[in-house]
Length: 130
Ligand SMILES: [Zn+2]
Ligand SMILES: [Zn+2]
Image (tube, rainbow, N blue to C red; front, side, top):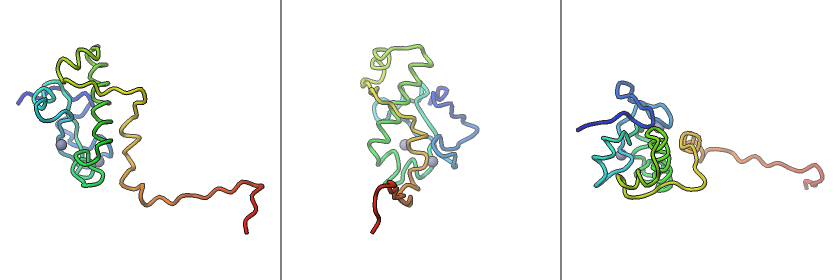
C-alpha cells in the first residue's frame, strides 16, 4: 500500500486523533472504491476510538461528521495541490464542498461532552421572575 502524506498533516510516527489528540487509528476519508486513491493522495487521518467507531460520535456512524470531514479533506487536498474541483472530481468522483464549511476540530472536538453541558438560562433585566 502506498500511503501519501496526510493532507491533514497527520504523522505516521505520532498516531494521535486529529480531532481530540487521543491515541488513534488510521481512517481513510474517502473509502470503498476510492480507498486506494485516498491512500495515495494523502486523504487519510488519525481518529481515536470515539471519533472513529463510536456508535454515536464516530465518523462511521455520524453522517454529518463524515460529510464534514470529506469536505475539509477535499479543501485541504485542493489547497495543497493548487487544484480545482474538477481535478478532485476526476479522482474521487464526488464534490464535497459546500458554501458553509466548518473546521471539524472546532465542530467536533468537544462533541462527546456536549450531552453533559448545562444550558444556562439568561434572564433579561426587564423580565420578572416569579
Ligand atoms: Zn478523538
Ligand atoms: Zn475508518
